[in-house]
Length: 114
Length: 112
Image (tube, rainbow over all chains, first blue to last red; front, side):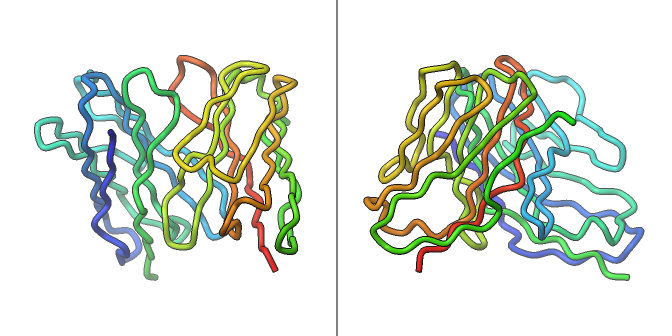
């Protein structure tokens, strides 16, 4: 069974500062993928970044980077230079082995303060 | 524009009634998924389909049914057997073998 844990129900960050959103995972599959999605108040899910379990380097996409620590089973999202539009719910998710579906964490509500 | 459409955006239903949520995609994706989201929680998988005329149950399939008669369409029926159907429902699709799932805008179902 796969499990995703996000321990921060809510986070606040000042505009233009960096913020780290925590995610730990548990799986017995040697091959897996880790995802981060953003959900604004409108409800749509927006894909941000992906990290494969065999990827040697941490994934980066613009202001988003994924701090992947395999031994610790953590996949934290780092947002640099926060913007007011970054205020949203953020979900960490995992796809394990040959499974096609995603397992989601409970999310972190990020609020960017002006 | 390519994407996933879900209709309606808001849906109200009386207890004991079945209701069908629409999901259509023009991305030519093979796989489609239905998720349920309750307030303050993550998404849970209801059903998924990797090919036409085939689908598998997810973690919370009880009280739901689906069909996949066309590649582009994956409707979800919420039956009267679903004890607590009020929730936000999200449809997604993906290319088999690729990582990213693309999501539709969602349908908010309220049972009165």
